[in-house]
Image (cartoon, rainbow, N blue to C red; front, side):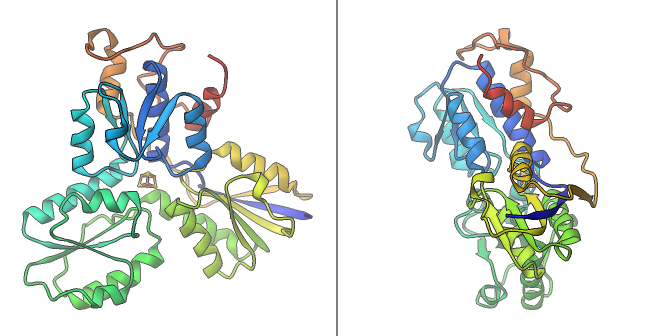
Length: 345
Ligand code: SF4
């Protein structure tokens, strides 16, 4: 492998929602005796999940697998209302780390369903965010991914709204939206798009470097929707060699020339650093920034309250945190928090 130069996309990697979810779970790990349970992968990244497992977090796909009374965190992708209710019924402390932007879509589904709308939802089959969102009003929601699927929908008598999974690419969304507008001329859609800023920014940064790259490395897990969208976009942009990898060990040997590097919203920055180290570009790294992200999502309210009033909480098993749990974690990077999980006690 002879790499001439690395073009490093910015923004890349952790978004505000992932930052919030990872730090919230880390504060849970510090505050409670193990094990802390987490419903679904906290974010779609194998390395993040493994680090939490090593710190005593147990990931489950069924709330029934959580022993009664144990603390539970619900993942950033958002959970179905019945999952949230089941978690609360287990009697332990429940923290819902759903990203506020996913909550916005849940709210739109609930509101439109309440007003009698049929809802066309553009989302990926089987994705946890789509499953959780559709469960808010399953009787009126219709999931589609392609213009052809829109054409196959019935001619609803009720008014029709269109909503989306937050991590769709603009390309995935635009064609389906056009088809929905054509089929339902009085279509309602939110004033502010459901497609999240982080997904859009990472895609813009990738497009800024794609034309200059002989190869593109996208870091992230196979089940990460926005990672897959980045890889697809690089291919569509004509990049001759696109690879999605979990980490440096998966870098192919036949990569060379000018190499673009980006990372999905759930991939930690230390992975980016180790991939660049392995690429070892002879002419160094040029970071190409299209915008700066300043968004910050604070920890879920009940976790903040818990951390602020540990003594007042009854019915949960708390241990003294090995180091203070910050109430304001704005200036703390989730990547650093993950690193600290690896350090002894
Ligand atoms: S990608 Fe967007 S919607 Fe998903 S967690 Fe990040 S900020 Fe939230």
